[in-house]
Image (tube, rainbow, N blue to C red; front, side):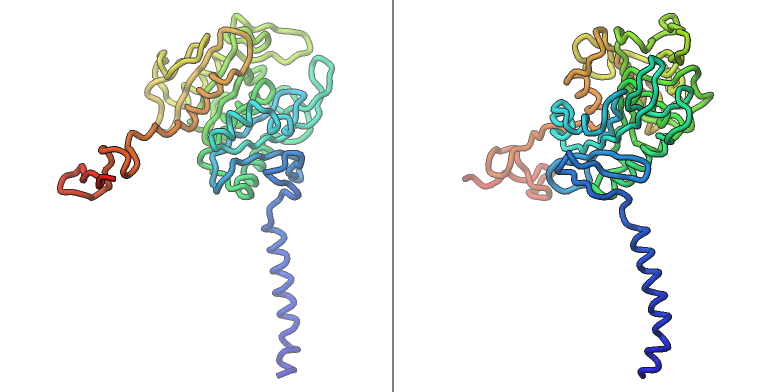
Length: 322
């Protein structure tokens, strides 16, 4: 028997070695991060991100926010505005961090590598996809309820992912940003898209007449052309006002007849580019409509309560008096 065990030892060691390799290879790719401690970044081989999740069990809907130039993921998850608006709804916040890169105005700041404007560096589209996949597994996020949003430089990457890698998220909401120089000839699949544009943004044009060509700077493509791009891939009909209750000083337009599962909504802000609570709430309501308030009283509180299947009629019977 001893000889049999000795003979089987190499086989056992080989099995153990394979098991260890499998265990290491299948472990989460990020380390040393905690959704309850926003000071600690989650690390991937290609970069860092921060996460905050609401209390209670998952899976949670997630809002992935791409910061604008000069910010970090830590700035996002520690911003009281986002904490109140996102966590307050029971959604998780995922905030990747861009890498330092030069800008056309001569400064170097954190930002995102995007088409037509950056050379070399990290593939940020692949990085964001990895962040969402890994964070979903580690923090119990619902991949089927994931909103990708961003402002300015972050919005540009949102557009790139929505058009060229549409399965990255289930919905997209770019704010005052988009493609530079030229649009892709065609996006790959219909998407749910909520586009925000501030008339007084001062940089990103709404219409072709607003475009300003400047030396040594990439030229932004007007927001209106982006809307037409999504209208085509989504198969939408004509736009019409009344897509919902518009916040103050805004116009809200929706497109009719889009392909099943897709959507296109445009919110134009008349004032300066400020993301107000009302505007962001409109985006979140569109992404994940809040449950309607219950009109049924709890047992013993009112006569309208019915337990399913009770009583001789479909309405059931009244609860016993208390």
